[in-house]
Image (cartoon, rainbow, N blue to C red; front, top):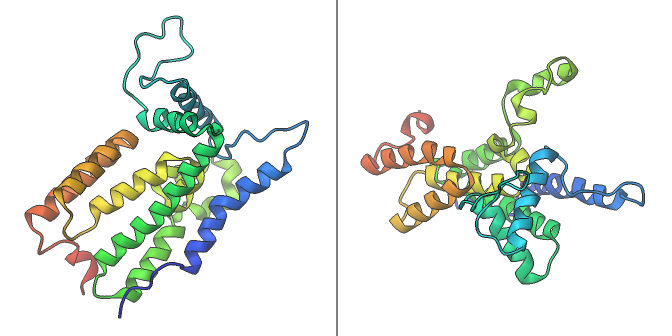
Length: 236
């Protein structure tokens, strides 16, 4: 039995979750209220747009904008600087490029998540599909605290640690879904060309350096003993 390809109904529901709230916010804006393009963690979101603005003006080095001496700059936040360059090359608004990157990363995350579970459950397509759906919409048990969110400050991690959960990563910003997608491909058991491993690790280091610290040791373990990966988790 061959694994089912997209479209998956759960994937379509999550895609709608990633798109519809932004569309509604854009539609609801008026003369007295303008939608800024960010629905979660606006402080970080505005900083991403500020970095893109520097790239839009031609910078490849990030400089601190709110300081008396911005200095020579450094090659940091290259992903967002690059998006700013893309906006300039295509003569597009920053928000259009930002959300195009977010949604394309979200689609890449869907594909990477399916790739990962197809590798983990290579002999059981039904279990692979079930795991894909649970991983896509699930998180931890923090959701049980939902009725008491007002009493626990920022709430459980499930509702704000966007880089950890696919359903929230694709909603939050442009670089989290790309980082998770790269990490999932690196973590997937099975062969992966050396050039692909190097490229994904380099890309992940630009987006989430901590992800490299997680993915590369696992990848090294898969390389050292390719006959044993995931057996404890998947076989009974």
